Length: 174
Image 1 (cartoon, rainbow, N blue to C red):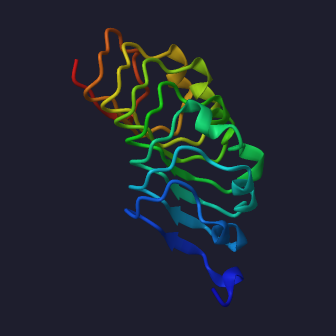
Image 2 (tube, one colour; image 1 turned 30 degrees about the vertical axis):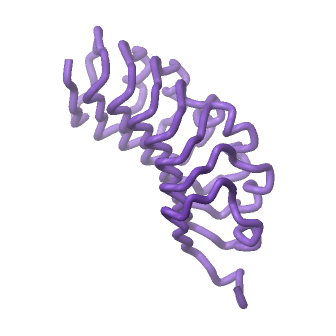
């Protein structure tokens, strides 16, 4: 890379990589990173150097809850789109609830059993995809997401559904 400061988008998909190549951390102006369909198991400490990220796609890796130890909201003030679908996540990592600017959050095809009431902290969320998980109930706090327009809950084990605000489009298989 001759001019790493000029790179704003990077797509490293379907390469079987188990970790981020060190050169990625030189891309200080990176806004979009797609590292989907690899074999990633953790997010390294250096990842915080990518502070300009607006969109991060990590779907279809091997990420678990503990993978997010170094993934903090204070390091990514511009992050709006986060795709963690098709991983090994059993609950939404608590750090995710601090990402105030998130608009889209995709967690489909994981093994999430319940949603923390802290979901209400994601005030700007407009799209929330939780399909193909093991969720049996949603917290009432989901109603505090006033900007939420799409809530995808199909293929879960829902026993109870709180009434959702007006204008929320949702897919549910009970």
